[in-house]
Every structure is written in structure tokens, then in C-alpha cells.
Length: 530
Image (cartoon, rainbow, N blue to C red; front, side, top):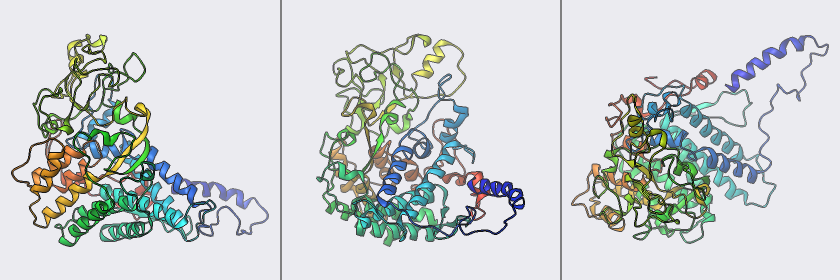
């Protein structure tokens, strides 16, 4: 789109040029570009990239988060009367019926590409630093950010635009695909691993908000674990060994699994042994997108939830515990959390539980909550099933408003409240499970490895671990962390039917490129099926 605007602007300036008496073009004219002169303050530009990622990428309930969560069996956002309709956008993501004009696709594409171009400018040999930061480490951070963004672009679109900043601004970006794109990402990560600092699990929370050697190793492992998907080949032992080695290096930096009972503490803004990389992003959308209007807002007497996101019953059923209740002492595993009942609700927890919220919900004084008066003030009972149909009566409205099990890893009344700026991006459990999967794909029996994690999380041991259990275990551990779409694709489960979605066509594994970018860059070719 910017390119089209530039051409239009040039055409409008032509008559003005012919009206001038001096037609000689000077090198300083704005329409002439001599090439990129470099970033004058690398530290400031790295901070800018960090801010782009913190505020735009995965920092709200839409965009990259929605495309990787709502398009899976983990989340659905039903239209609840006049709420969450948004011209069918949310249901189109869940049903995988999107097109190239979907706003979440356009915004994610543009934001990720903005990270790559800004990082490329920062990495340039022409870029210097006017502040006190170590320029080698700062450029290594920029390489990590570029690899992170390019990895997502490759994963979601399979075509990665790349602009050589030393060329004139009019130069059309080339497009990297397949092995060439992977080589570029891995090259950035190898430099990042070499030049980023070693930050151990005990070094303090603030040091983990910037890229570290462990974060770069985790991304390196993730890229190689999914490499066969991008190249449409079988998993290669050499790639799986890279995964194992990278995770071993992370473990050598002191990262490990949290102790029993500490699972939800990982997502609090305090130091822990699992968090490898977090960003100063608003946690509010991860909380209020799922809670009901009647559930407490910290420090207020009225409700604060947006009553949107809910999980599917089949995803909830992956966890140990009874199907219709999740109160304290119901025999559930730790990761499924619990709903506070009349005996455990208090001012400290606001009556809001963690994990999976099902059945009757409570006020902080133990009083059972009701839905809104305009839908009959019925008991606020979150049901297992979510239907999407036409509702014509108050009773139907109440059914729709309370439908669906809610899913919550960030609590609104923990340190910093609902607006604390702390979202976990990478943590050791993801690396641990990636290593187990890589070992499995190389022929190892990883049952004892998975059972070690399950024992820590309060789940019973498995007799054997297959691909089905590996995928299920990643779902149980990593829900709400934007891994589900990628995992389902890798295990060939992304296109199957689930609640409110029919089986899909293979082209839906990747997204369409926005039409405006196809027009602006002839090196891009629209993905098949769109």
C-alpha cells in the first residue's frame, strides 16, 4: 500500500515539475534516495522494536494470539447477542473460513513485517549507538527479534519479505521461502546465541524481559522442530538433534520445571525457574476476554469481564478430573486449576478461580453470582457446551451468555492487578516438551520423561506415550500461550472437525497474504486456495 501511495504522489508532482524553469534534479531532492544511512541510536531502535512486540504482538486477544488460538480446538468466541459479533470475524477464525481481508490477518502480517524491517535497519553495519549500551549485544537482540518475527511469518504464510536496506527505497523486497528462509532465521539465531548474555533462572525477573541466550536457544529448537512442516518433508534426525542440544543448553543455564503447586505462580510478575522470556505487555486482555460481566473487577463493586472467549468441552476433557465440576478437592490435576466455591472465595481472590472455570461462579464473599438482570438474572453457571444459533427469548439469551468453560492463567488480583505489564512468552516447560517430542521422533521411548512432568503437575502417570499423548500433554501444559495451532499442524490434527467447525481443506494450514501487499510487491504470490 505504501508503494502505491508513493507512485500516486509522484504522478501528482509531475505537472509541478514541468511548470518550473529549473528542471535540473539535485541529489538532495526528496524523490532521489542514496540508500540507507544507518540507525543513529541502536539502543533506542531496539527499545522501539521491543515496544512493537510488547504492545502489538500477542498482547491482546486479537491478531497473532487469535490466529493461533481461536483457529484451534482450544478457543471459540461465540456471538453472544449483540456482543462479539464483529461481522463474523471471531467465528470465521474458529471455523477456518477466513479470507485475505480479515483484519487480524492483515494486522499480524503488517506488524510482523514492521519488526523485520526495523530489525534489519538496526543490524546494519552503518548503524551506530549514541548511548551507553553494548552495541554487539544490542544488535544480537535485534537479530533475535528479526528471527522471531520471520519465524512467525514463515509459519503462518510461508513467504517472508526481506528488504536489503542498502538498496534504494524504491527497491521491491525479495521474498524468502523454504530452506532459504530457514537458513536466514537460523543464521540470525546463531549470532544471537553467540552474542546474547547468559541469564540463568535465578538472575532476576528484569533480565528476562530482553532476549537472552536461553531465549534464542528455545526459538532455535522451535524452528527445527517445525522445519519438516515448512519444507513438507519427514522429520529429520539431524534437526531433532538440534532441538535436543538447544534444550540441553537451556537446562545448563539453570532453567527447570516449577515445583508442585507452583504452576500458576509462573504467570505472576515475579521470578521463577521456568520463565525464559517475558515482555512488558498488558495482561488485562488475557484476563477479561473470558470472564463474565458479573465477575469482579479489582477494587470495584460492579463487573469487569468482557464475556467472550471460552474453551471447548473436548479440550477441557484432556485434563484429569470430573467432567462437570472443578471445585477444590475434585481430584483435578494442578494445571486444570479450580473454581472458588463458597468456602474458598474471599477478597484476596475476588471469588475468581484459575485454570478452567465451569459450573456455578461465586462472589468474593461466597455468594453465588447471577448473570445480568436483562437476561433474567439466572445463576452464573458456565456450561460445558457452546452452541451458536438464533435465540429468541430471555431464557435463550441467558443460555448463550453463560455458555462455555472459561480459561484463565493470569489472575486479576495478583501482584500488579489486571493491568500488570507481564506476559510470559517462552518458558522451560515448552522446551522440555519439545525435547521429548524430538527424542520420540528419533525413536526413543519418552514415557518416563512425560510422566516426570505429569507427576510434578499432579497428574497420574501414563502407561505409554504416543503422538496422541504428546500433543495432548502440550495442550494441557501450554494452553493460552499461542502454541496450539502450530502444534495441531505438526501432529496433523489442525484440519479435523470440532465443535462449531467442520473438517477443513489443506490450504487452511497457512493464511492468505493481504491483497494490498500482493499488489504492492509482485514477488509475493497469493497462497494456494485463496
